[in-house]
Length: 98
Picture 1 (spheres, rainbow, N blue to C red):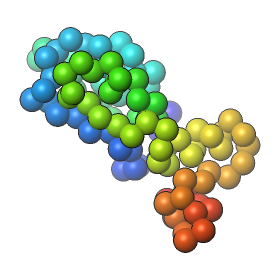
Picture 2: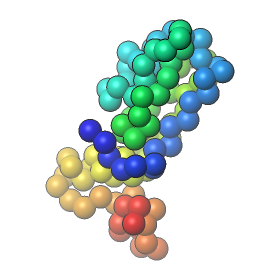
Picture 3: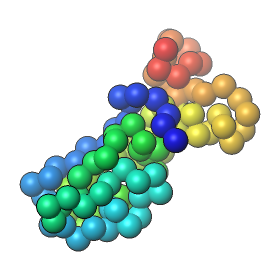
């Protein structure tokens, strides 16, 4: 499931990747795959910013601001049935990436 295009805070430094594959194992959205003995991102827009990849990367190759941003707002709105709010839209913070 994709949330919103180009809003994730996910950052990946392939030069720091050692190819352990932990990110592939822990990502619930399939954002990472192994290619040529290193992790590679399949589709950044699949990231829901849960932080599992960054917390499990012992080499600092991955960073993400877990629990922030529009991906979290979309997930929370689906869970609560309300409108997504992340504070990045209008001055009042009532819309999500508008």
